[in-house]
Image (cartoon, rainbow, N blue to C red; front, top):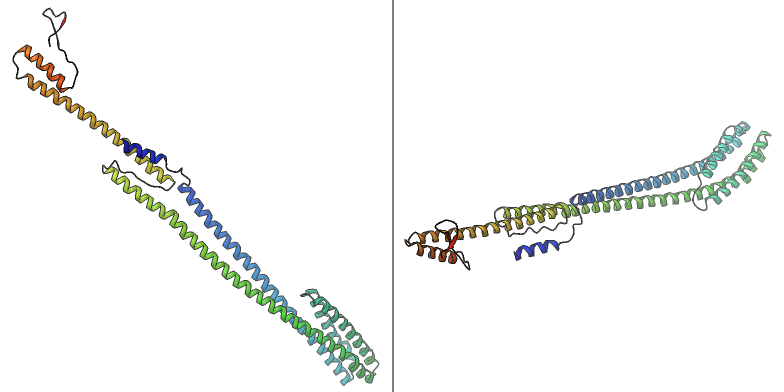
Amino acid sequence: MFKVGAQQADRRSRPTRMWRIAHKLTAASVLMIVLTLLAGGVGLWQVLTIGQAIGDAREKEQQRARSLELLAAGYRLVAALDRMLLTEDPFLASTEIAASLGSLSFYLETLQEAGGETGASELFEEMQMAYDELRQAVSKVDVLARQERWTEVGATLEQEVRPANEHMGLLIRRLVRQANQDAETVASRAQLVIGQAALLLAVLVVLTTGVALGWRQFVFRGLSLSITELRQGVARISSGDLEHEIDVRTGDEIEELGSEFNKMADQLAGVIGTLEQRVSERTRGLQAAAEVARATTMVLDPDELLRQVVNLARERFDLYYVGLFLLDDERRFAVLRA
């Protein structure tokens, strides 16, 4: 009884249940979903960042290509002017020269609309001023060519058009160098973003795998071990070892089930002990009655028989006083005979 009371006190001292199995599985699922969403969000952010870096790099490449086209258009303009002077054909002023000026204007406007890094706006202003000077010089050459004043055309070409075009070319080369630097910067940034994305995704994969394995070790292996321990304890109790205590501390339904098995074993042990005590008492009573009956069969004197029955009953049943009453001859009163 002391052992049963100690077991019950120990069970009452156990901590209150905190997490059920459903809560553990739900927490594991939620954690995996959160990690998956985090990995997906980081991956999407990295994809967008890489896409933006690639777009910036493509834009810088286009700016460099337009700058080179602008430089080529300036060379074509000077070549057209030289050919007009060489052939003395004023008709070229309205064909090739006009087309070259249109190309210069188009690429210059395109570059200005695209914009650039810090300092590009000032460079575009200088290029616009150089283009205006070049266009004025070309217009002057056009007027002189239509008047067939070829000597003055040659002088204007050498003194005004070529210097203006060379100045324009210097500005364009500065723009190309700046575009190259911007493209290299964007490419380096894109490579850095790609490296960071790969590293971050690798960390997330390792973290997700570690959490999955750790949670599996914590939840599923713990459940397996506790169920195994519970099964072994139940097997010992069912085999007759009612004093065995199932000690499962999982804080969930398995611990509750183990406690219920312990209570059932305690109650069963109490019932069996009570039954054994009753059987023992009943056996002692039957043995005493058998001894009294056996002793009385050997006595023939009635008075001696009565005294011996009373004495044996008092001794065998451990009684303080035993009296034997018999009816009188008229069967009206009970008379103490022994």
